[in-house]
Image 1 (cartoon, rainbow, N blue to C red):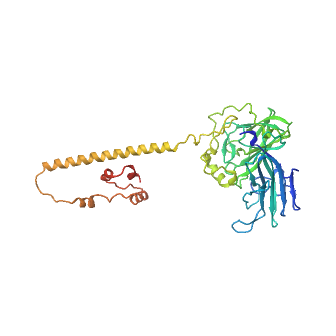
Image 2: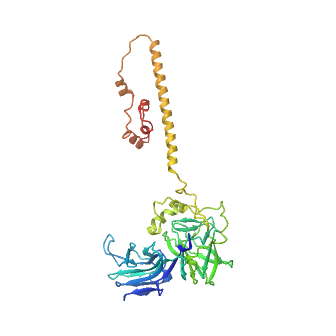
Image 3: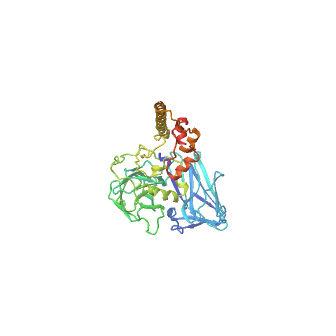
Length: 449
C-alpha cells in the first residue's frame, strides 16, 4: 500500500475549520469516559445546540468526518431523531451515516471517497431541536506529492509497519499473544502514538511491553487491559506514545513482554506527528525488513474470539460479510514490505470448488455402476438356477402365485424420493430399495435424490 493512502487528521480546534452560526462552543472531554470507543481526539470537541454549519477546505481525494454520538430518538423505530446533519462536497449532498443511539466518541458522521484530485470543500449542516451535535475531527487523503505537516493517520496494513510471524488479524485489528513478539516501524516525524483495542474475549490481566527508538534504551509501557466486570471490547485505546523526537527519519521497534494469560498487544492504527509534511505521501522502500518468521512460533489465540467481535463492531468497521477471506482474519499472518498479508486460508486463486464436485460425481458414478452390475449378475444367476431346478424336479403341481401377489406380499412399496427418503432421514435408517429398482432406475439421480 502506497504512502498516499495515509490520512491527515484535522482536530476540531484547527484554525482551518470554519464554524458558522452562534451556537458553537468548545468542549474539553466531557464525553471522554462515555461508551467504549475511547476518548475524543486530543480530548476536545465542538458542539452546537443550534442549526449551524461547519466547513473545511482541502486538496485531495477522500475525506471523513467524525464526532460524538449523543442522539435522542423521537419515535420508537429511530427514523426520527435529534439532532440531524447532512454533508456536502462542493455543494453536492453526500448524505450522512446512520446514528447510534448511545453516547459514543469517534463515530463516523459522513464520508466522501473517490473524489477528483484537486481542491474541495466539505460542509456539515446541522438541524437541531435542542440536542447537541458534536464535531471531533476530520481525516483526508491529500493530493499525491503534497507536503502536509501535521498528524498522520497510518492504518495497520501500511508497508512501513513490519510484523514478525506471531501477529495475526482479528476483525480489523492486528494482535499478538506471544512473549517476545516484535514489530518495526520506520517513519519521518517527531512522535508516534500507538492505538489498539482491548479485546473483550481475551485475558484481562495487565501486560508489559517496551519500545526502542533508533537503537536507544528500551522504554516500558503497560497494557492495562479491561476490568473483570466487563467482556466488552474497548476500541480506540492509546496504548503508548513516544517522547518528542527531533524532526527526521526514525525507526521504532516494539516488543511484547506478555503472553497467553494476559492482555494481548494489538494495533489498529498509528498517528505520526510530522512537521515536515513529507511522510503523508512518502512511498519509498522501507529498508531492513525483519527476518523471516520462525515457522515453529505459536499462532495467535483461537478464532473463537472473532465471533463476538464481529457481532459487536459497527458494520462500517468490517469487511464485507460475503468476502471469502474473512476466515483469514484469525489465522497467522506475515507482512513484509514487498508482499501483501498472507495466510493459509483458501483464496479465490487457490480454492476451486468445481474440482471437488467433479471428484464426488466420479465416485458416485462408480458406486452406482458397481451396484447395477451386481444386480444384473444376481438376476441372471437366479434365473438360470430356477430353470435348472424345473428340469430336475418331478411333475408334481405346485400352487401358482401371480406376480402381482408376489410384489404385494414380499417386497416393500416402491421407493418414493419425496416421502421414503424424508422419513428415513428423520428416523436415522435407510429405506429398503429392491434390486429391480436399480436395474430400472435413472442412475445416480434416482439413488441420491
